[in-house]
Structure formats: C-alpha cells, structure tokens
Length: 238
Ligand SMILES: N[C@@H](CCC(=O)N[C@@H](CS)C(=O)NCC(=O)O)C(=O)O
Image 1 (cartoon, helix red, strand yellow):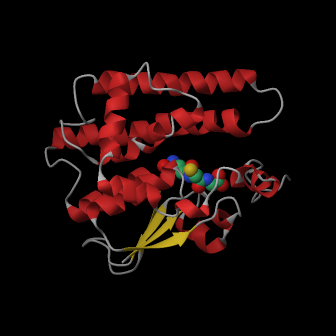
Image 2 (image 1 turned 90 degrees about the vertical axis):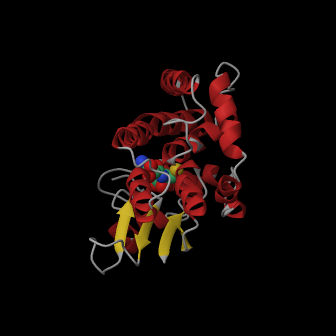
Image 3 (image 1 turned 60 degrees about the vertical axis):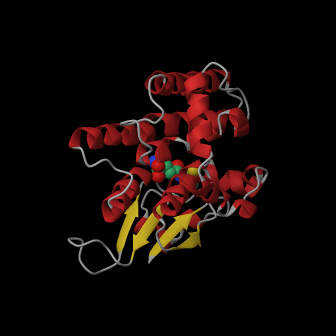
C-alpha cells in the first residue's frame, strides 16, 4: 500500500495520474496547503521542502529494505514508481535517458516558471509588472521548447506515452487558465488533447477536485500561509 500525500494542484496531478495509470493501490492523505498542513511535523519528516506530492511506500521494492519508504519531489517519485512496476519508462537506456531529461527539465523549468507566472498573474499585489513579464516570457519559452520537441512526435520520448508526458502535462493543462492560449503552439495543443483523452489522466485530475476552489488560495489566511514563507518560519515573518 502507498500513502499518497496530495492536494489537487498541477504538481499533485503528476502523481495522481501516474498512480492511476499504473493501477497501484494507494490511499490519499490530503495535505491542505492553504491551511498549512505542509508544515505538520509528521509531513516534514517525509517531505522536508514543505511541498506535496510525496509518498510512503509500505511495501518497497527489493533493495530498499522492509521499513516504509518515504519519497518527496515528483520526479523522484515518478522514477521510483516506474521502476517498481516496470512501466511507463522505456527499457532502452538511451530512451530512458531521454525520459530523465524531460523529467528534470520539467522540475527545473516548466514547473517553477509556470508556478511563478501563476503567482504573479493570479495572486501578487502591488507593482509587479517586471516580475510578471519575466515569468510570462519564461513560461512562453518553455512552451516553445515543448513545441519544437512535439512537432515531429506524438509523445515526448520514443513515440510512446511515458512518464515524461505525465510529469509535464499538468503544467500545460492549465496554460489557458493562466492566460496563455496555445494558439501559437499547435503541436503542444494536440499533445495536450491526446493525453487528456486518457481515462487514467481524467481520473487523476478528478481526484479531490471538490476540496479545492480557486478562491480558497486567495483567502487572507491562505495567502499568509503560502506567500510569506522564510527559512526560519512556517509562514509567519520573522
Ligand atoms: N518540485 C516539486 C514542486 C512541488 C510544489 O511546488 N507543490 C506545491 C503545490 S503545487 C506545494 O506543495 N506548495 C505548498 C507551499 O507552497 O507551501 C515537485 O515537482 O514535486
């Protein structure tokens, strides 16, 4: 059994989709990031960066010992679950290397740039024109990188659906909602539709949908939790 620490956001969907695709047994442990659950001591033991998704595998694969195995960071979780099941990661080492490249690219580029863009477009107050432009451009640049990759292929690696598509897709799903139409990125738009048509993907995105509303993250208490984090605190300014 896998405990899945989750809240319905693009980073959470990466792993809800993957768990659904792999048909693994899991139980959801909601981490309400608007309420500050990500700072619970028990959760920080599993995910020291106070971010979800995270998992605890109570039946780790051979070699990891018999005690429950905690994993944080979506790409690390993704690689582990693919290794556990032998699925959605190509056996060919060159293709597996390409999957790794697109996993690391997502967590170092598309995700953070999209996340900062979302912050400045949806939540920032005061004068932030420069910062908003900076992250809008960076997210746009990332969509261009995906467009060039997908112009000649249906999926990111080896012509086959893989975990690379799953990790990248949620941050493209929300493009229009962040005010970035995909009109200039036809290959990305087609890929977005191709992945969205999968039943496991739809189940993954539907998980916990009722818990979160767009307005929740804009409440004063959620803003205080999410937007005032510093190195020595759990949300309050020092
Ligand atoms: N690089 C991380 C990003 C995870 C992340 O940023 N999660 C956000 C929600 S989308 C979170 O837990 N935020 C809580 C907070 O900001 O305190 C991953 O890919 O797993």
